[in-house]
Amino acid sequence: MKQVFFITGNKLKFEIAQQALAGANIELVQKELATPEIQSVRVEEVAGFSAKWASDQLKQPVLVSDAGYYIEALNGFPGPFIKYINEWLSAEDILRLMDGKTNRTVEVKDCLAYCEPGQEPVFFCGSAKGTIANKKGSPGLTAINEIFIPEGYDKTESDIPWEEMKNFWSKSMKTYQLVGEYFKKR
Image 1 (tube, rainbow, N blue to C red):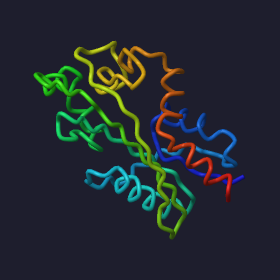
Image 2 (cartoon, one colour):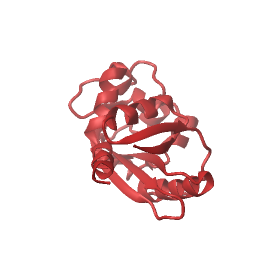
Image 3 (cartoon, rainbow, N blue to C red):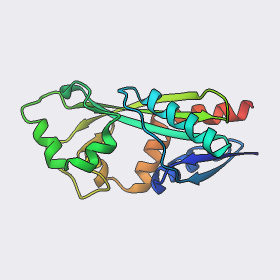
Image 4 (tube, helix red, strand yellow):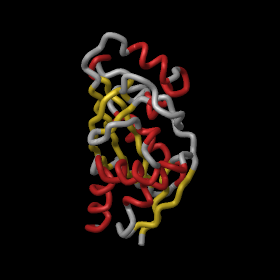
């Protein structure tokens, strides 16, 4: 069984990865490491750069996740800059940006980059759809999860039980399934 460091300080993101990769013939270990985050509108570029950097620093195989929320009515904003938007804006601020917009479609793009020291990253990407709510849901972990309604639901992510959302995120984008298949073949 191969040990792989999952680079994140986010306990919930690690739980999703653990659940999704159970039985994938890897031992996933959470490692908090501040990686440089390049500025790009493509989650693949952000995840790939961070994975290569972390793998070379740790001299270990790593897996890095990067996601972006691409709101159609806002020309794809905030995209991969969601981390910063969640720090700078409240759910109400984002909803004000949506004032008068009828198209509330969001595409959430996720990319997992796997990298071994001295190698180039391997990418596993997927996406899920949803909409931006007309009003804020329950207080949540981030501004976006207080207003994001995943496809197939009629309430915001912050109003859906965590176990259900963990299952949604681990399966909906297929990225973890692709990683699992990759490791099962190795």
